[in-house]
Length: 133
Image 1: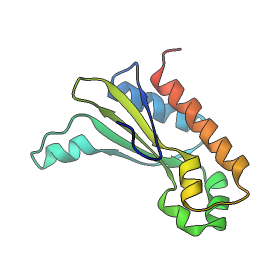
Image 2 (image 1 turned 30 degrees about the vertical axis):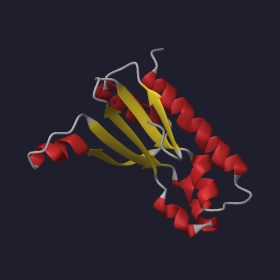
Image 3 (image 1 turned 90 degrees about the horizontal axis):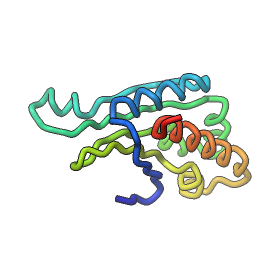
């Protein structure tokens, strides 16, 4: 199930609750939610089955913009994205891009502090979304 550059965590909640918890924590941290895409609803609209699969696109311009000022093509990886999905056995998962991976991918230099802070924030948000208090 591992994909290069992705961090994937099993949730102790169902997919809907996992996404609700994730989005609530993103908003609580003052980040902007740009889009919430329900892939399963889109599939159903064209008569195709798809287990629960939702994507949240979110970020913080104060953090992301300086990275894009350094390497504008980073805009393909920002804003941040998180995918909540259900596997064939019914387990819910949360996947998101590892900031260190896209920093390496774009050859960012001198941004370790920002990238590490971004990674730590994503880890904390993901933990709140997938683990009971």
